[in-house]
Length: 180
Image 1 (cartoon, rainbow, N blue to C red):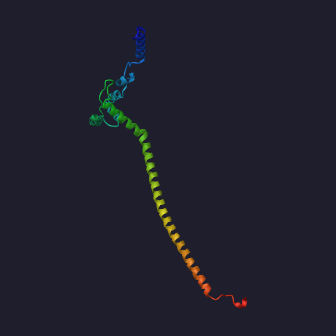
Image 2 (tube, rainbow, N blue to C red):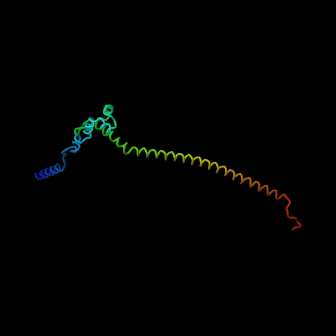
Image 3 (cartoon, rainbow, N blue to C red):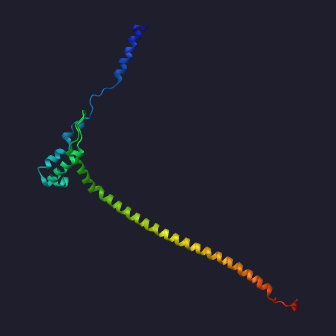
């Protein structure tokens, strides 16, 4: 049987193990909870009052933006969770458009230049490859012809040497018997 002391020890161990596990006091960071306060949407609401500033910031007028938002809102809308509210389609679209604008200002031109250089380099390599293939074909044809020519020269020289041997043996020797 289990004594009272053992039960007391087991209970103390269980309590200390449970107290070591850390309970979360919150599920989101404080700054995420203040997203509405520090969001760029406040700026956009102020820019709506000045259409020229809106146009400069978003690179489209307010009516075009509203049409675009109506078109894409069902596609980019997310559901709220227990932990935090979802980012609204207005916030998503405005952040995306602003990001794309920054890319066009700072990065896309550079990327387009790199892509253009890459395509030129690729075209140059393909031209060189076509040239080298043609040159290889020419050299292989030339090599095959020279090999045939050397084989034909070898066979004709052996034939001529046979002819010359036979012609020398049947012809009278230039050395006469009186010379001996």
